[in-house]
Length: 215
Image (cartoon, rainbow, N blue to C red; front, top):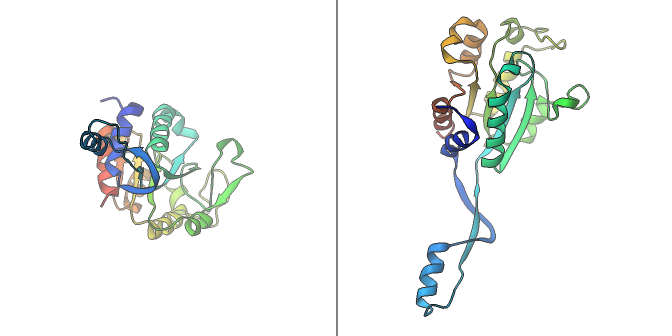
């Protein structure tokens, strides 16, 4: 089934855990009907606190290079995620996670955020979602200086471990067709680093990923 923003939203809702909080802002239709009936037909509006999705999400999106082939589906995923999760923080990276990420891809060379700051800013109760095709040289993951954009002092694998040590609930969504995963050593390495929590960016893959995050 084609994904599309609507279908993505349906899949993401599997992760929803609503909490009643805040001021009374939402109409309680059932209670309003019952109260109005008891009030001899005079309208008696009943309000309840607005429902919010209590799940907190950290979204990391791979941009540039081979990800240009997957722009449309990633835009749909991003749009749906922003709608479904009230507590959402998002960052961009290229190919793999290193010591810095960024919020605005147009200013990626001037406005970056240290990955250490991410780890110390957002609590361990956040769910971690990576989106990327994981198609690169294994050297970019496993060795210092492996990044194609800068001289990274520590391997990307080290940063991935640090993130997963803090955020126990994590998945990697891969827009690359699953039947091609075996052709890329880098995909196998990322699957190993993430504890085999890589899922295809399909409707079924999204649903499976949300089940994993809800554990």
